[in-house]
Image (cartoon, rainbow, N blue to C red; front, side, top):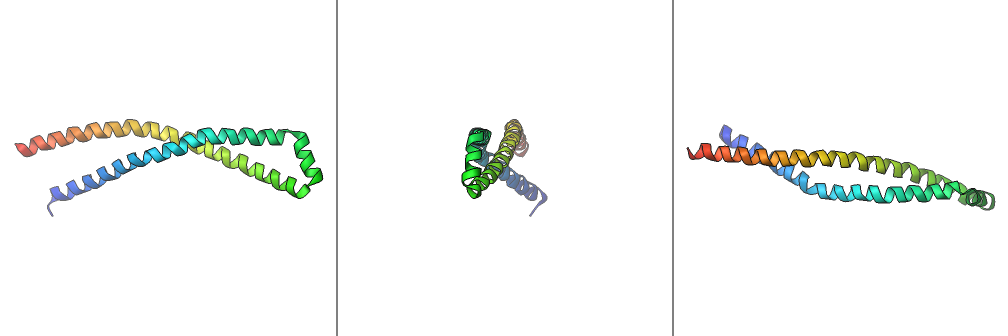
Length: 122
């Protein structure tokens, strides 16, 4: 295999990888949207439950095991929802930058392909 064939195959592999990442970006966008919709709803619901003193007191006094289990569940839900929201925000920022970089990559790729075609034809 010549040096040019090796270089072309490496570029082809990298191109395929980049295009694959761009197509899986749509799946990540769905996850990001779910983070922006479901997480605030979950946080609001859990805060309403925990900030209602009659509800918490009633559970702890009448059914201590269930009340403590529910409080532990609510705390875990708040922590995980906050983490999910943080990840969603972080990934949204990444994919906004990715779109700009990918569009730049496509234009540079077209330009390089055009130059290589011109070089091969001459």
